[in-house]
Amino acid sequence: MICAGSALYVFVPASFARLMRASGAFRWLPKVAHSDGGALQGWYRTGTTTVFCHCRLSTYGYQEQKKRDQIGEIRSLVEVV
Image (cartoon, rainbow, N blue to C red; front, top):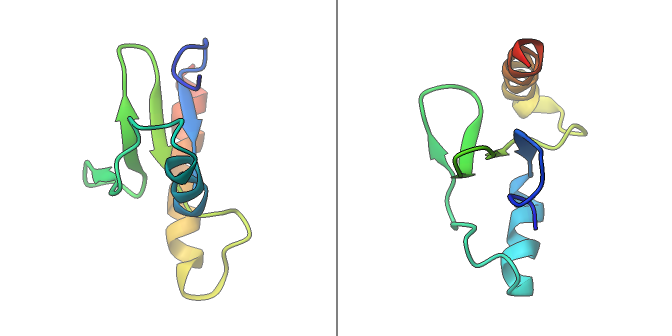
């Protein structure tokens, strides 16, 4: 579903990924996102689509800086496209 479309990047918070896995329809979604050293972590990658794990945009407090770093990385991805 998600990786079959034309989207280059898909952003899924960990809480949503947990629900997606529980539904049984997203067996390809791992329990733990992998990190390439940046603020964004990746759930899954195909030849054309990357599914990222990110903080929910309503995050605040001790996660605020992480959220801002992730938004910066998302911005740089979108600006390239």
